[in-house]
Length: 204
Image 1 (spheres, rainbow, N blue to C red):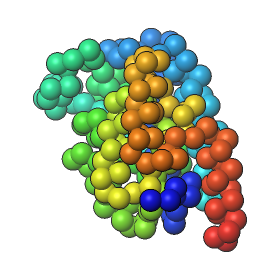
Image 2 (image 1 turned 180 degrees about the horizontal axis):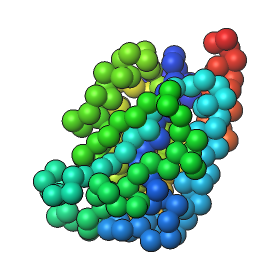
Image 3 (image 1 turned 135 degrees about the vertical axis):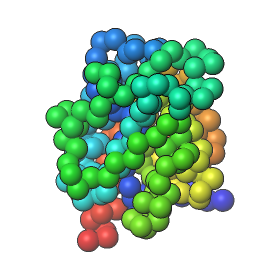
């Protein structure tokens, strides 16, 4: 197969789990790489570019009920209790991301943004073909959402400097795994923004 363009058809930006905790010094229950916070701050530039270009933006929020009934096997590994409803790190920080009422919102109980949510219905309504992903964790929620997007036949793209993993090694391994599935999927944010601008200018 020839390498696909960076943007194919209608793009949609998925802001995966950029929650208040992303900008806190302590991440309750989840280990993160040292550069995690700065990566989330850089992701704000991709959000701003999508807004300026009228590219639909979908904010994904992992959130769990206070009685912990919906964690399932999520606490069997390294992660402790996290994204619990009512905790200060769980809400989406609209005051930082600039999230607007006209943007889209998907809550989730599992890692993948597709699992048990109406994301697929929303993407069909938006006639999406390319999913641009930013947020965290690279090796968990971003990776699993990428794989599900891939299996739903979307062109998936990841801004490598706007996602953060549980460790540097896990982050790098997951980016390599995503690139393995779709050649050209992993790009620097400036390249993705440039591709967004070029594509939307041609579509205008």
